[in-house]
Length: 228
Image 1 (cartoon, rainbow, N blue to C red):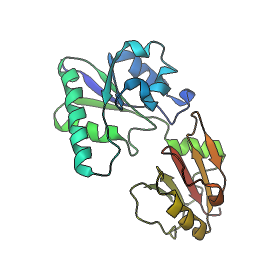
Image 2: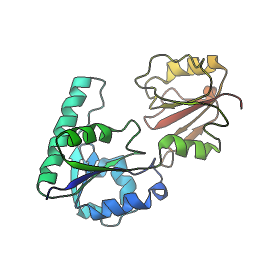
Image 3: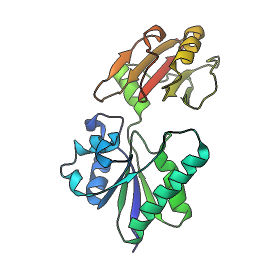
Image 4: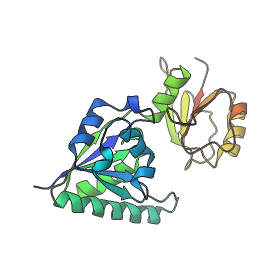
């Protein structure tokens, strides 16, 4: 019998936001795969380790995922990671593939899962709390109300945003683009808030576009709201 690959969301950073199912699945799997070159340096691993005693004693697999916009390099990395996981599945091992937030939202595990399914392997998805939901909770604001649409954008890849459509926006991963985004956000006239490292060490909250630092980190979530 081949093993099953579980795409497990560990939530946005606060260990208490891990779901009971995520904890159970990780405990039951003999192997745990995490993004990065060293498992102990992985943010997703460090979150799970605070909730699951003895996690370091499991078979830990590091999956190298380069931070690049070169799509061919990314595809090559995904294929290599899938091959490593398939070796374990062929040996009958169940593998928990950890990811921050939820596996269905801009997650590397989505690409891995697609490859595994195409290759005929069993997979399951274990939902986690998305970072933008945790950020809204930290700010004590609703993401959308009544008939407001919510637009979720990966700002690291998005073209310049005019913010001229109705509703609210969530911008994820704005690192490296904050200077240009600040100009667009200020010009939009909308309410802007952000949380950096939500639920993690070094968390910072910003309550206006003017407060946003140009060196905001990778784990920053921007929430852009119209008046309700």
